[in-house]
Length: 58
Figure 1 (cartoon, rainbow, N blue to C red):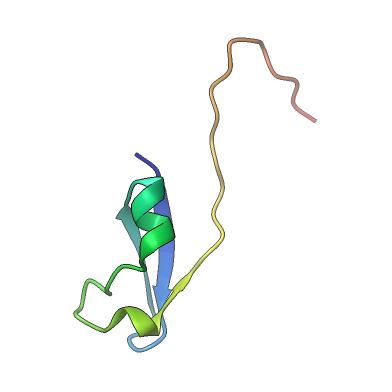
Figure 2 (tube, rainbow, N blue to C red; figure 1 turned 30 degrees about the vertical axis):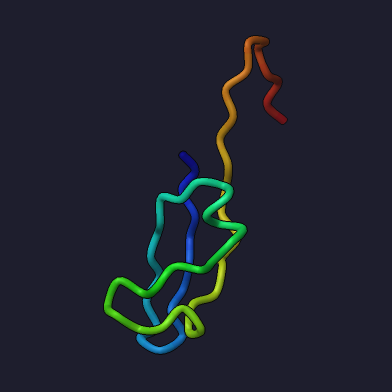
């Protein structure tokens, strides 16, 4: 299950959420401190992929 990063504008704190892709597409999570989902914005985060071939590092 993917890990998504969010930021609450009300309390100025980042948080992560474990959500399926379907859940992520359907709704934004509430802030863990109880603020409404309207106050939450998505953040861009890094991704990690495992492949069967050896990757080159640049």
